[in-house]
Length: 138
Image (tube, rainbow, N blue to C red):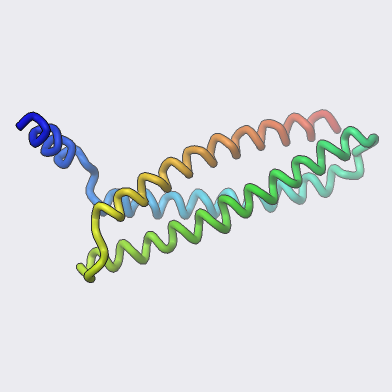
């Protein structure tokens, strides 16, 4: 009986799938902005390469460019594709097509939320490193 009550409470406290969908739309917007930022950061690195005076700076710059490429692939390409697929899944779920479950949608949304939080922290750390490096060149 106690387990049934806990499950009931958990179900009642869950966010609606419409709210989860809105969150995914916000993630898409955030990822698109990250893409713009990454393009700007690449230009910033390219422009400041002329100020690089030694091999140490060049190694740091190569490392930053590598992180930028990896982030672009991981966040922009991979995660964006996954979230867009999730948007399609949401549409099928609303149409009550067979083979689509709300539980599966919720689980995937949760995984995307964890991934977004991880990438946000990773991106913030990258930006701090990039800004510190560029500032050292000025």
